[in-house]
Image (tube, rainbow, N blue to C red; front, side):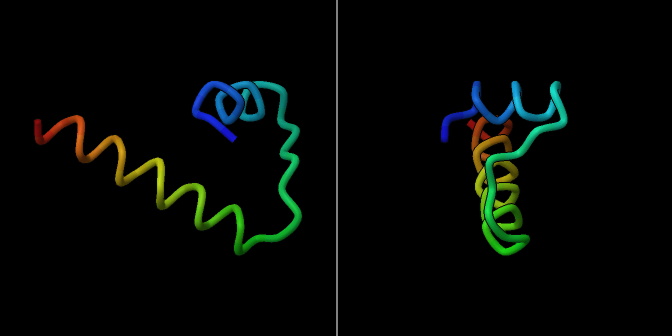
Amino acid sequence: MGNYEFQEAMRSGHFPIATDEAFRILLARLERAEFDQIRS
């Protein structure tokens, strides 16, 4: 699931995510990507 799909899910309030764990992993990945963008 890419960033665009994630943003669409946020907007619609619909998450095709099976578990809270998967959601936490996705959020951690997004936060890490944003942090890397800020640093570079």
